[in-house]
Image 1 (cartoon, rainbow, N blue to C red):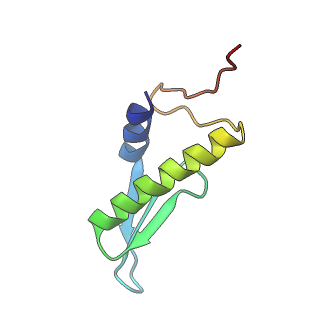
Image 2: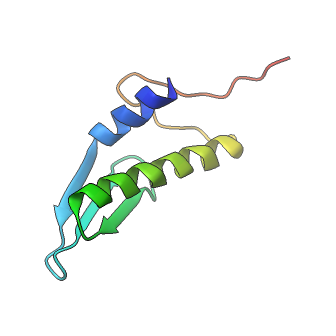
Length: 80
């Protein structure tokens, strides 16, 4: 389920070329603080995926909610 969640979030990523230095900027709307800025589109996608993974782990470790993406809801359930 985690892989599907990450893939769904990455499909919502938006990329643009910054005019001041021709670098690539990517972000995922709804995932505050998840962005990347690199020299190529490929490395921007790779870095954005890494940032997303770290963001998810941070939020899970702090028991913070995650956005629902394409009907996929990740939640932490307490186990007895």
